[in-house]
Image 1 (cartoon, rainbow, N blue to C red):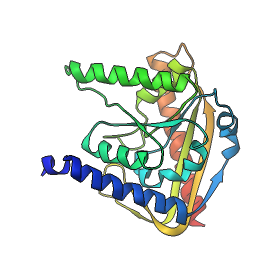
Image 2: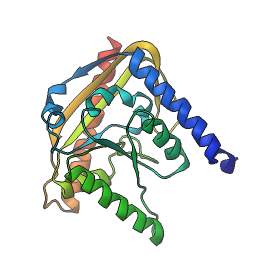
Image 3: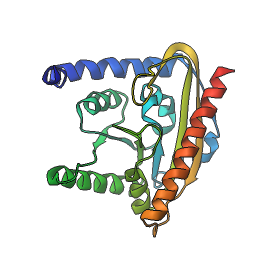
Length: 233
């Protein structure tokens, strides 16, 4: 079954289905944005890079931010897993090509080299004025906890980080999935709450990064809860 799901034909179909759904949600949900002004200077500057974070469970809603990121050269950081493959295809349909990267298990030198190369490519992309959109708790979780990789990219590139809390109502939420993924019902309401710019100091060590992870995870969750409150009114 795994081999079947990972086949190129199945991945192409899954990617098309998800990509079509993403476009439907963007076009039919009535989206509102809060604090969008915080990211405007970066969007208006072709030379300014950015790292943008939203939780993995909101991937089905992520094109809510497309009108903003279409204004820049934007790529997405996506796992090379089978799930990541069809997500990458879906996002490519809307003009967001992927950089594929995944954390390596201890002792897996091949994957470790691939991860280092991908992080280097992502850093250069952001440093060169591109935007990089990341689900920092993916692909395996824990849910709503930022992994260090996105902060390392921000530190090495010297570019700002923006947080995007996304929600929609009415929506289906799969409580039995690790990320409690949310699917918007077309023609409903949606909200994106922006926070930033945030910066990782160039001299930040592991202790400082750990502190930022705790703080920024709480801030991104707070922005997500705020978006949920906006659409529940």
